[in-house]
Image 1: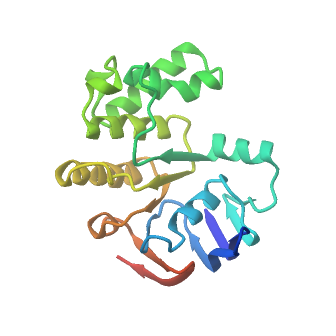
Image 2: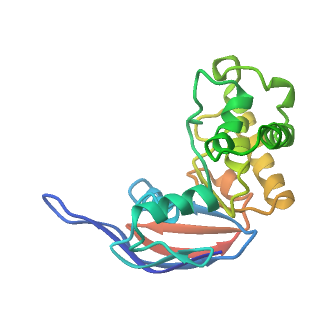
Length: 224
């Protein structure tokens, strides 16, 4: 599902910074993989490359057979829209929309039929245990509930890959554990490949593999 070969990302400024330095790995369909490392190790840069939010300076980054390196903006937008679901640390819900409408938004932007939108949004809200909270606004929900809404939103378009950036970083330990259990269950039931950036060893232990980065290099690739 994901194949990264000799990926390098450099930033030019007053001095040249190498954020990723020859990183290579693959992720099979349905795997749940954690990316760990200290601040500045290249974790977020790698996630941005996988999500088509940035491009490698050299090397290859393939997602579901599509080479992302060198792809034009319109084509990258289509890849993000059709193949990737994003889960963020701070939820990124629209505050004026209900939980239902936040989840339904990607489908409405794609002009899906109203009946399909309702059925699909309700199904994924039910999957994350929030069907009864569908009409609540984000500020009427707890942090854990907001993250559940964000996960449902990430799933509604049936992405091949879920990319999660510190999905428990803004939650207390108990709620974070519940979110990790939910992500693991979704990985098993829905089958979306999941790549999760995390500082949390407890979070990484829920994954099949742990990729460890340091100074832009992949220093280990181990089963958890």
